[in-house]
Length: 436
Image 1 (cartoon, rainbow, N blue to C red):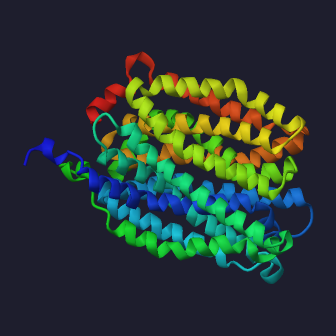
Image 2: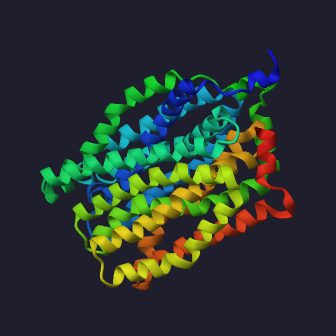
Image 3: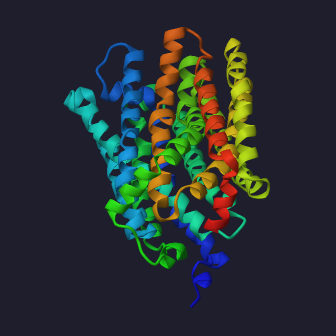
């Protein structure tokens, strides 16, 4: 059998099934992440000492962020494992670790019951989730990249993020049903745990899907797989591309966590809109994210990654703060929907191009490690820090539109990184031709 035949992607039918099986873990990850953000207020009251509401909320978002700091650790440790042992086995291991974190948070007793042990227990759950998430996204992106057809890598890899939008939609639907059937006091007391238990119930089904994954032809075609020490050494040698990749990803992670995880809190706590309004906005955002992601990936397959990345990051840079300023003057449901859908467009199109771009630019033999490390650093330092940064900015400045400055900073980072990566004519498309 020739090397060319070895690297050919599977047939279309099996490829579609592989997309579903590979992205199922992404669904669980984002399902729990969204729930943590949406029920942040209830979680703060359940697991943290009573007192100042803003302080409790800040502690909750700090716990959320500390979990994200484990993502780079997971990217290095689990990324090296996947680059050495294989994509399939690695994705099963990450799912097991993620499931443990989910169960920890779902069953944790309240602060009133076990005292200071409650926030510690929740933090352990978040650390496990963060460790797993550090390579889950990268592992899935690399898997989809390696089974995609030539000329459609942006389109295929976009479904990594698209699966997360399905999770947000499902979580928002559950949240909407709870808000319609339970009182606000009941949800705050114990009802918020129901979606987390539902997440626990779907874990066995996702395990079944993941176990049926096949190894990618690209990995099987490699004549030699690097040892863990070789992966670490190679990643260290490629620190510049990892750093630039992190800055390029910052635009994605900040915008995403703003429009999904932070939006419900922003709508209810800052804008004083109803829970129903915040959920409806989130539902609409999940739908439009799902639509724009493959569109962005497909467009970048046709015209190149660079123009898509620069155009969207530039739009975000000049419009983020003005749009939020317009929203907070007289907040209404239609205005919040318009603003959030604009950010959804930015996220979807940019991310559709960015995931393929980052996958193409990192070295193939350490693809999972380098991709995951760049993405995890961006998520930890920028993305999952967004709810905390937004809450702090508003509290410190008194300006409800202040989160716009954080969004502008992320957009500027994306522009600088994209220009640097494409500098001196060493384009990602050239690397893509080699990777294909």
